[in-house]
Length: 162
Image 1 (cartoon, rainbow, N blue to C red):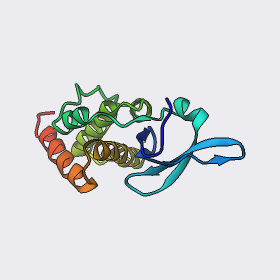
Image 2 (cartoon, one colour; image 1 turned 30 degrees about the horizontal axis):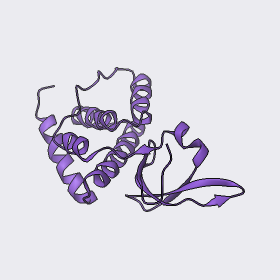
Image 3 (tube, rainbow, N blue to C red; image 1 turned 45 degrees about the horizontal axis):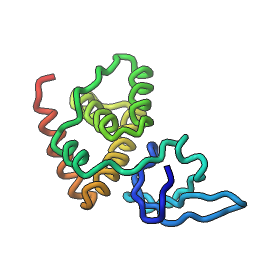
Image 4 (cartoon, rainbow, N blue to C red; image 1 turned 60 degrees about the vertical axis):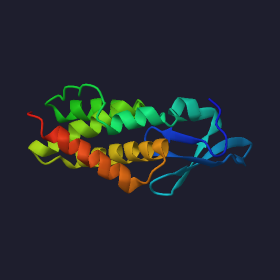
């Protein structure tokens, strides 16, 4: 897929942002992606963007559905830390906003029962950053609004038996 300056896109491991420019360096074109939450600019070779998983931000209706709790059934979480970590990383790398939301929900539920290990805590922070940035750009609001709305959603999820 070809993107233009001003397009909102998601990098599966860094989150959502806006294509600020498409410079040419050493004969190769790059997308200069200005990340929404931390203001960092990352450069992605245009020819590698599909392989990396760069994609447009989800639709407004899909973002609103996620904010209302429509993330689908939560996947089972293996007892083995290594297996759980690998499966959750695969969901994050998928680039699917619902799967990222599922990772956040699963890790938040797990943290309700016991403290997360350092790797899972960092994974939760990364998944939340990716999710927040995409939803923020999809519905055109700020990070605080998204955080507030998702916190309310996760609190409802936490009140479920489990």
